[in-house]
Length: 166
Picture 1 (cartoon, one colour):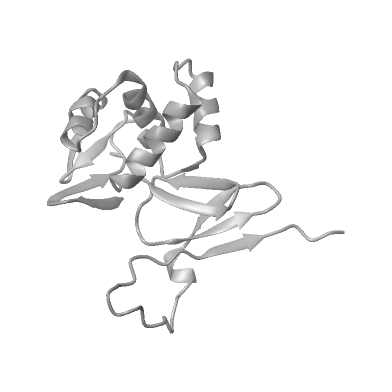
Picture 2: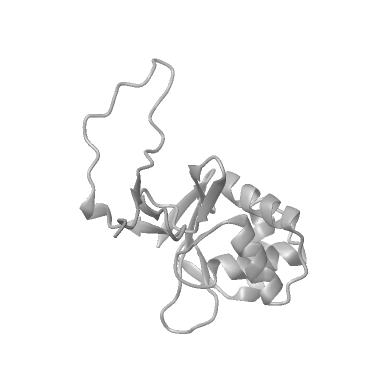
């Protein structure tokens, strides 16, 4: 479960194992899907119907990695009336609020991760799949000293995989 900090408000996202309904937890208290609009308003967002529906897709299950295009296709498939521009805007707004982690794989592809904890990724060059590396499997040591007026905020490691030619 990812703990997110929004100013002085501590937010946690995850699933309650008791039911299969979407659950979002705020300060470790689970809220039902119908409370998503209020949650969005509390973090400073307008609770538009498309934004609420995209929230359900994004946070309605286990952690996931999506691109704007893949989320748009999923939305269309589930009969959500939304434009690709709205999907991009929502993903960027959620990232700015710390609800999603933005991962730039290359200049052409950006993924959004619902797991905002400090972790690293495998990227399969052949399939375009991005998935988490167990935090115990990779240690980063020997970090450089940042410039005087800056701190290291986050380290992103992407291990690229490619199927060998036969």
